[in-house]
Image (cartoon, rainbow over all chains, first blue to last red; front, side, top):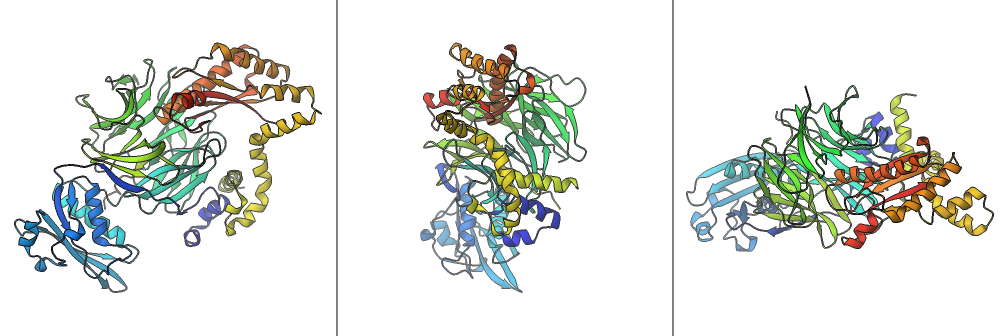
Length: 440
Length: 182
């Protein structure tokens, strides 16, 4: 806390000190625990051998972090450590026939070495059947950065073997709620995608909801009721500095960033009814998008930034619509299967929408292909909500209820693999997956 | 004052209003803490109103308005059916009682807090809670209450009255609370 404060620029420091109880940037108590709840039969076996240069029980076990990332992708089945045939730390030491006997298709070996004042991590990926070296790199690191380096190695291995960029270095934002009604405490938390390193960035006795990442992954927009009514804030993660961008009379809700990061789509109720607007952040220019007696909310930008998907009950029950931001602005209905479809979130390739759909009596997560309107229901609980795509499109994180408590869960985009991110205390909800950082 | 400083002070007031226990105050926030108590009290008094009125009622030295308000607070929640924002017949007299109080005391202000059960999407539920609050607002206005006397807020499913994921809990959470400043 002290060091974070000290690093702030004066203006940000003023803000942070002023709101000491509201804006905090310390580790939060409860870390989420990942459990696989539905495995995949055809996961690829891979051996991740403990890295050389690391003592047993090292603070950050590089091989364990890599193996965990690969396991949680649903596409790999890392060998148990006790089943490893030997402990090679370089390609030259691998005896392929041993690993073939273990039916491992691939093997990752490596070591951690001192490098100047820091550390370096070398690793190699080999095909066990052919003996071919598929990847060999040396990454600069440090004692504190070792976990991040391990996630990066897992991403490189994952991409080499699947052709899909890994998202193991990204983060998730979510809302944690402690205490019983009516005296509840709300926290906005940012953690690594595997649930590690949870940091509370905002704390309040009034509700916090709807965190949304800016396209560059550096800012979060969210709704906070700290002023006894809803308002939208934008908070910079690195400094904790934040701005209140909308506190208009009535509801200020459902912020969503435009693809270029310059505008927010949001929901306002200036005349007692919810409609969609866009807000140019630099100029505070507000533009009305819908004008309808129905509830219009939960906007999501199309990939080209020229239209919004949103939830509306203009036809009597909640369905997803799309409206162009230019010209006539006649909304067209997008969802037709099921009597309730809400909270659209676009896949990173712009081809699919993740939605909440009322499926056979339960609120579940579905993914609808826009071109065909074909809907896949991915989950099977009664109260699943708030879907958000991983930046590589391979997974969807969402909120569910487990033994009476709110928890998070992740499902592969084809529904075959499910895991739960649960907290030991209180509820967790409203997850949002950070986008990939901009290239270059 | 520069806008940023105004914002900082707003954050200060809100931050301390949101404080639950003084022990949560971090050492380097003590200078900010001293000046903020007034703000915290002002912001939180709305919440303490119920308790204060209750204590006053026992004391017997109430003005007619205070007595009327204490009576109203016995029935200050309107419950709704699933996915509905219509005021049920049994709550029509409740809303009427609040309307007559507000008409009789034009300086009185009421805050209508709309809520839903936990099913469905969160922001959509904010819309449903708002619709319920607006229904009560319109009913009050039809009975002569001035627009300026009423504010609405929707908490959707974010502030349940009770925990639980069964029909009984859902029924108690689908509501509009009529809240008066002290």
